[in-house]
Length: 300
Image 1 (cartoon, rainbow, N blue to C red):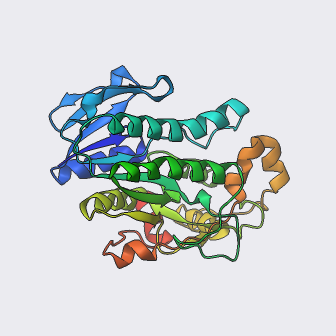
Image 2 (image 1 turned 90 degrees about the vertical axis):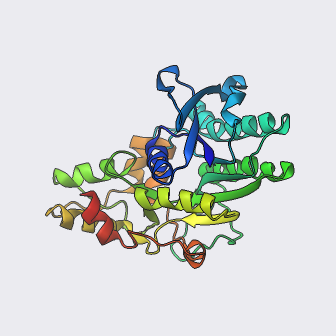
């Protein structure tokens, strides 16, 4: 099998590429950077520019499945121009793939796309399943809704669609986790607000495994890509501190303070989504890191 991956050189993409090669799955990938092009038989790079509507259509040769990961990080101050980039990096790229496939013959039968649990509204009480009808109306909620709409249009050209709604990804190599750990390491760790907000998380190894599981089992529909045991911000902070042999001595950081520092992006730190991953488990997926303690022992 040969897959096409967008976002292959990112944190999650690199883990998926590694698993693909271990499973004898060849990889084509799309990049905007000529310096990241590779022409190995099992790892071939192709140029594209979603903003200019340009793509090297040879990327589709011999490909059966697309793994769609591309999207600008949300962990950067949300100026008006950057909010546009967050949205368009997801929707414009998906639209370009769709338009390119719609107009030519191809062998692609399945797309598995990243999405985010930010589609669910902020709540301390709700326990969100994939079929929960509620939708968050904030900026991030609107981004995820439009992202999924862009991916779902592949159904109209007879390509099956699988969507993984991803929670907080834990990796020592990048993303949010090193930023969470650093202040705790130097004795300046604290909860956000009262620390009661739910954090639905997943170890990066399990997330990469889930993408591979989705393409191998040809999963369609929506799946929550989170570990089975969400924790509160307070519990996660305490467990990181315990693993580091540190203590949390500072009071909770007030919401207004983070709003002053981060602007609208502060909502990432205070939003609460308790999300259930039972559906993918019922289909046979098993987590290596199903509780936060085992994940921290591996990561720290």
